[in-house]
Length: 260
Image 1 (cartoon, rainbow, N blue to C red):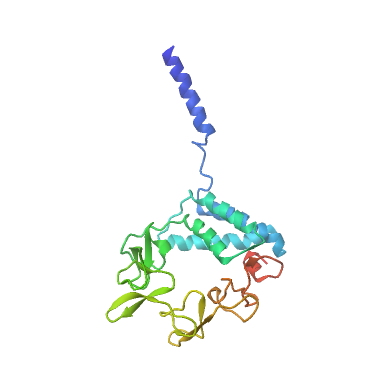
Image 2 (cartoon, rainbow, N blue to C red):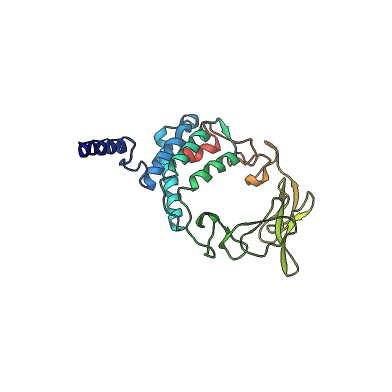
């Protein structure tokens, strides 16, 4: 009788495991499945852009596939676990009539987890995404993966991974590097001597022409060429004007990458 009860319990346990999805196939087994699901979430804007969902997917899917190929070349392997979190973040993002560049970057940070980096400390890198969890790519000190170490104003920042606080930058004082206060409005600036966060380096042209720290551009006023020039953090590629955020409408520059 005891053995019979054990057999019944085993059958119940197996049925429970199946019911709970223990033996279900992976919902997003590869990057192709992920990219297809991602395009479906992004293309809720198709109607707003005046295009069909199929036309939008035909544009978005290859962009995702290309990004996956780049990630693979950076030693970043596809990991299906974070896919649903990414799709949920995109769903919430594209449900908004307008979203900021900061909100878009936050959603993309969730999606970046699908292709985690694997490069170890001291390995060469071109982007922090290539490095293993907890490491950053220090492109100013050898372009290597390093443990992040937060530094404040006047701290030394000579080691790979040393990251200066907001409104400071790692600059030279004699033979050593320190976190130096960024430049205020009206001061000269370059690629290596930045302005404080609320300003832009107006007139700077690589590699050697310096610029001047000026107020960031307000929405709908002067022309812009980069997001960093705008108070809102978003320069519309179609109008070359700073706007409040990313919105989708027929003929809008934001629709170009969505089949519009």
